[in-house]
Image 1 (tube, rainbow, N blue to C red):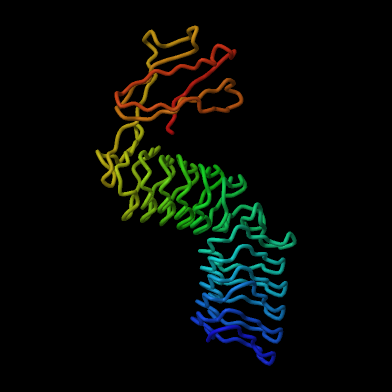
Image 2: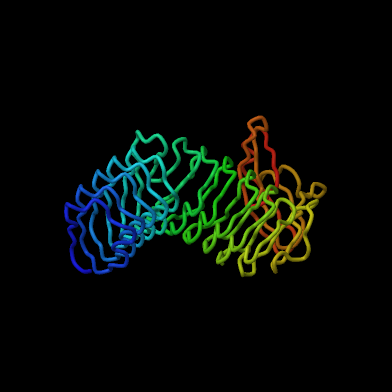
Length: 368
């Protein structure tokens, strides 16, 4: 079928997959007589354009209903709808914005995956089950981050209330830039959560409450250069870091984890591990494994206060990177990264010129 379609007002039900694959359909009007729209009813109607209004007689947006309707730029969801099932708007790459009314209390999952132009998801403030902040979809108490819209750009900070990042929550958010910080409150990161976030850069630190790095979590995050994995992680599933071509260093704080196929990137990344941990050999999944054991040399002339500040030498295994952190008040427990150093010769010198301006200072070495 081609052109614009006005469904007759005598129609009460649109059957499953009724218009599936009608790629020539450019316009659609659904009358108020329609109370039921079946699964996949308009799936793959890629030429359907503009904003579609769902009549207020409809209570359910079923599975795959508008999947791959890439020409749609907007959808008006009425307050009669109580449930949106899985993949309902999957692949609606032209969709720019969406408002979920207060009536919707059930989302089936993956409703807004592959919506690459979607810049914001708005949830009515009165909704008892879900909420939105900065265009991102959460459960009501903001402990689960369900979906960051694929068209979101710039820097984004995950709220500290979040304990769970849902499956594919940030998938395809290639406009997100900078370093993504996952708060320490997070204990669960779903499949493909950051897949194809190619503009994220710098180092990624996994929170210490996470025990499993799941399938495809950081696949194709080519801008990441460093990775710190806490001792809590015991398993990394398949293709978790596949395509992370920029990763050059991975720091493991615990025992060697169990790996599935393609868990680590296929590049020249170096793996570092700590003294006292187990399961390490000369390589991990083909990547050279190096003991990370920097020490402060306190017995030589470089250690101590000079006119130029407080300094010391650091030595250890060749080819390592160390962050020197400083704390001016141990009671506060606040440590600030002061300097990051890399060396190919097994040692380097550190100096803090600001130490002469501080009444006290404490230093420690940490992984990047």
